[in-house]
Image (cartoon, rainbow, N blue to C red; front, side, top):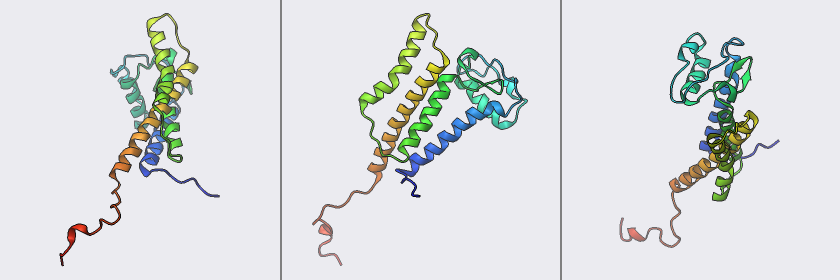
Length: 188
């Protein structure tokens, strides 16, 4: 059996890192006693629940602490595993999954994303969020998860494209034929 060729060690490293992060986010509710975190609702950019995390192992503590500062963690917009609220809302979990999937794809398949696909990939998340903000419409978690996955994968493809371009720019260029050694005539 032949394994697919890795397109870039940097992209592959990012794929591994984002996959590990996604796994940590999904498994964190299983690293604490069942029913310990039932409502982490708070405010973005504020550590509202830090005192709750003090009593758990450092690894789920770290994941939940990051979630507490970076996500609103509204209970009705989050999934529950092991009777515990996940450290991030459904949309953020989708974004993490999409980023891992997107980097997983480009780790083995060289892909150049067309600008139109960036718009198409980000539009569902934007529309869902804006409509929810401006109207009485309340999105459901499966929609939040799917729009997050699509947006996350789109962002990963875009970031991977930038990484590929930077790597190409760093590669030494081939000298033009017939010009080798032209500047060292008469030099010993």
